[in-house]
Length: 439
Image 1 (tube, rainbow, N blue to C red):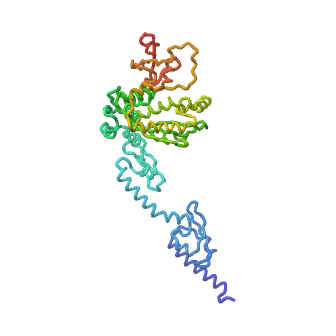
Image 2: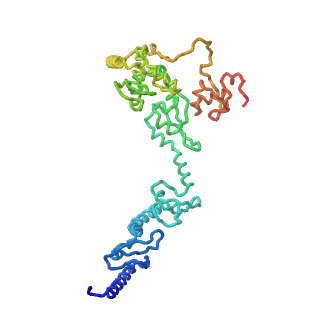
Image 3: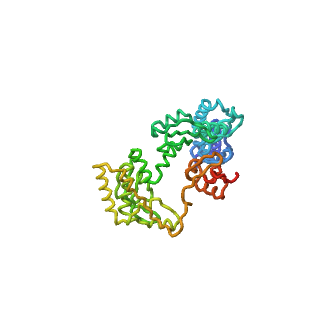
């Protein structure tokens, strides 16, 4: 039998509960509902009592009476998380307010209080007289302007280049005969005028100058042309060209593996990418020597050309530009030996480049129909732009100048299309004869 009766123990429990309840309200005020705790309460340490948090989505939770007094959130997990985050939130709020006052207050006015870094605040644009919801995070770290009109004006201003800045940025990059002389804005982006002593001036975008090695589109187009013509250019100018690589490799195209002899001003890995499987030999020399060496390899090993990739591409109606320099694997050792011999010879004597140009050959491995009457329809056709009256030696030249395609110009000439590049086109012979269609 216990020392005290159950009635006495119940009175003690109730007095202890009242003392605890008073401390709980002193600690948390009227924040919680204790209607269920009176039933559960036994002592400060145990068991847990049920308490109701009236905040939305918080609800009932259990906690020991002792911990309810100890925890800032009273044992409600959601209140506890909010309490833990309060100092951090206050720090973020002060940081945002400082940033806003120092960087944005000259054109924006904050119309709603800070709630959280991802919670929108309402801002008023003093310039365009409009409100916009935007998150503090976007304003501080996302380059946000808080006003779409301000953002659009800033984007437009960023595209307006200054001549002196562009000249300084590209100083020394291009040959001495290339000069940057002017800048204009076409409504979308700035265009830069490039003056070339060898060709007509061009208006180009900054992105072109960043990527180009030549600065002048016509100079670049000349380099891209037929290798024999490029060799002629180098000889006439007395230049040796860019540093280039020649490689003997194993490549795979259309599921076919073959021996490839390739040349590039880049790395072999960058030039042939996923097609490249193995590199058997790699050498570095000047462009003029690469052109001659590659042609000499073709002349010596033309009877061992591997046409399987060319044929597979025809069947698939696809094309791989490197198929003409593919050979049978059995010629690998002889081709590498031939290249090494030529490289050793280059170290001892300078080639007769003019003689090499005279002996330069262009190989054609395609099947041609020759048993029919030939005409002049496949020759380049000079064309004229009706609006400007400008004459072009070929459709391709016109397409490059007017930022369209040769195919579109051809469709205009055949009557299947009205304009190409926003212009009307006629054959030069028709224009001269006065037979051009009335446009």
